[in-house]
Image 1 (cartoon, rainbow, N blue to C red):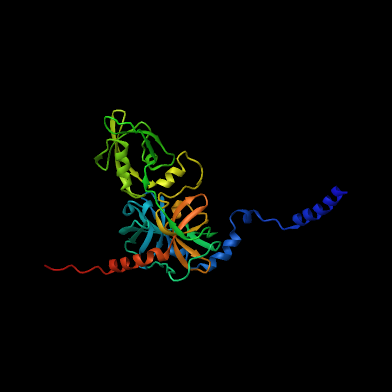
Image 2: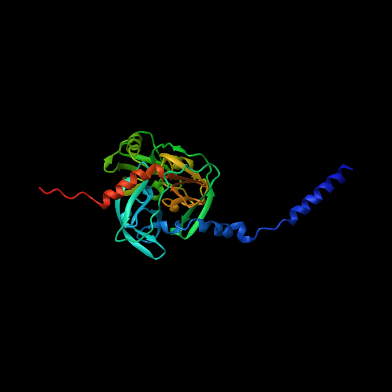
Length: 339
């Protein structure tokens, strides 16, 4: 009797489930219909976004125009030698870059596209309240070629920093000369620079290091994104490598190469006074681009891809009052004083 009753309840439920319209293949993947509805809400978003590329055309970071005369902001730690690259926008346009000022507390870099006078800058909203948990956000990526959407996934807060790291384990026993590297973290700055287990570090930025404590002290003075020159000995040959440091938290989270990020994470992921956390599907190369709500308000800049589902953005109120005067001062530098 009970079995018959159970089936009589279950069958109508299954029939109702089968009667629901199935999602198309496109709706299950890219959500083009959703984005079609969102895009008209963001008429200025695509034109405000650009990309910083290296000498080979490889994308280093996104950028956001902040002045019609070519001023832009981008992520500083991903662009250590920005003047060797170019800024690219609207697919076919590009220009040389003039660096103006780095703001290490925000991991931002203010620069100008040389000879550019007709771009459409973003107007940041610094007066409205910050978005709340669960509110939809949008960001242009690929130089404005696409729009990605997601939601605020945590309350706005500060993110403490634990300093910079190369991603090496060192022999703590005193050596005759230098410090022996025991192992290298997966996807680490040291590995990217070519260092290997068994190498002996002799100098950092020209200063001799006699033990592992000296290496720690030297790196501790620096920020994620800084470059250091490491002189090391491999077998009987002395080599030099340039290592771009990363956040210590990034290194420790992924020491063994766990696939916790898939598309990669940013070099610097912490030490921010205040961030908006969201779940938009972005990559490290998308950092430096603007973040919008669905009303079309530019609320900040995406600054760090932290893991598979987490991105931090800097609210505009954190940095804009500092950036705006820098732009004006650069436009109107003081005249030279005659002797």
